Image (cartoon, rainbow, N blue to C red; front, side, top):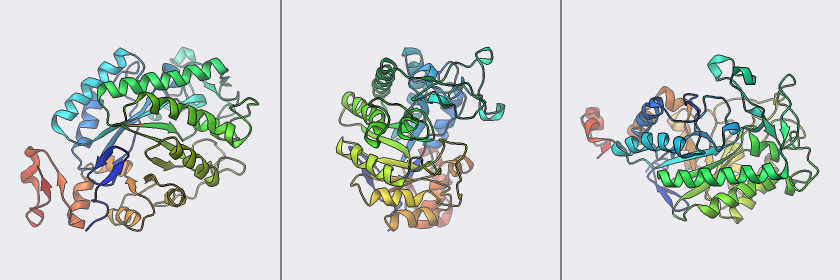
Length: 364
């Protein structure tokens, strides 16, 4: 029996298989509001047969967007637009839906990837980024404004407000984004955090922001909703955040009721040196899994179904993320199920599409 297509629980949420469609930024929102593109994009991914679909990094406040085109969830207007898209998706798909709540920190106010992917000025629609310390990502970027204690509390409150809105919309899962060089990751890394207060210096202090945000979100979200955290396991830079730090953080999150750890890496420094290959980040997930009892999601160029099956079958991780590969082939789980002798749910309209040799592949 395929381990990839066996059920798994993320806290209170049961998934029918271990394939996760991760948050993937679409840069297609208007003033933070979801558009028709999000309905199309999420709609076809929701029919993929994956176990879980997580909506892209969603800013908890306007200045927390990566770009002016980022999705947001900070008021009734942004909530209503996303609610409309999610209602349509749920009409035709039973896939559990999650959302990643995020703040871009010093990596905010940039153009979308196809327009240069570099910082933009106020005249170009940008804004003043903020960060734990006044250290820009690129040397020629605007120096970010150091967050005051008051602003730190305000950011935490913004995560809480977004979480409440997400629960009202009906998301089954919330993922706090503490990876890829964005705000919470910036607090974690000694490369970007030079503070001398209780949010800087020691590992305990640098972890405080991520732990405070998690505690605040977990405290307002119903117990029947899963809440987890995505981390960058290493900065891939000497003297930066590393795998041992990530184990410590993961253990502290588990103590506080975290339902899963989503393990990525990098994104904090332009000096990062990464040896990229299929599954290159899986060893980080395996290391964390050895030290915690909650599910761990592995990521990193996992595109071949045999590779995904092997990762969970050998207990390197509990679930696998298929991101860009899913954009290229939105029916990836169908092919995986056919090859591994498993079954996937599809809408009635697609039941007759199964190849004759796989006539038992689909479930209503």
